[in-house]
Length: 294
Image (cartoon, rainbow, N blue to C red; front, top):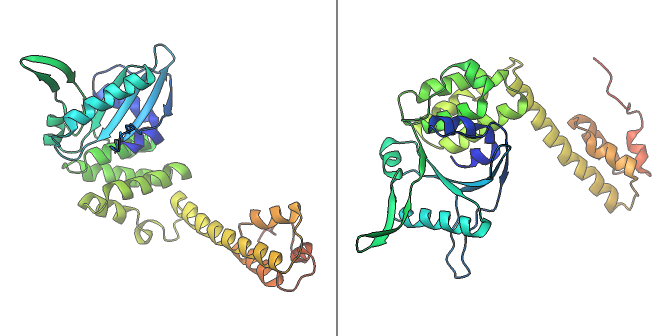
């Protein structure tokens, strides 16, 4: 639930809007090391840390934590993260906690105090986003326009009654997305939802049987093309390996042509020829530079 902020920072603005906090319209976002380990053998890692560089203000850090349940140790850990990051980078720090159940979200708002004898030395106020303050995205049009935010909405509301409607909207939106977005959303939710009922529903939506068969959808074409390219790359390595073992020199031009080919049948043919040719260029005999149109 935290990684999506690093990989799809466009969801930061709507998430902050849901929290009632202004977020800069234009800002550069960079992932920085999330390792806050001390020199002593005590390892500490923030889930995700981002450096935000607004075009209209001062830079700040955003530490993002995904929290599935109450954890009494977090009151100390979160205070440490904020203090450490502020000390290391000399920048203001905000802590954002992402939850997908209401009891955890309510607990995570804190505040978490550190003090003694009636005096508070430090108090931590996390920003918390969860089912109660993140609007669900249940229409396919919005899911198509804002796929990362829709996926985050599905994850946040996975345990609520509206969760199925969000997944249905994303399922309808997938064929209308560009290939990269469709594959990212499909794989992200498959991994993040895991073996939960919501995860089972999502896998049913994007399953090969129900989604791919011969309909020519974007996700189907991307999937099949990816399978073919992966097979061709494996065969291409085999061609080069055979030539190397036989002591046959391979020019840069020939190597480029072999590794760039994405047609498994053609590369397989080259692999057969690699066992007998005298020159690497002989692989391409009777092979057109470009495939003929059917």
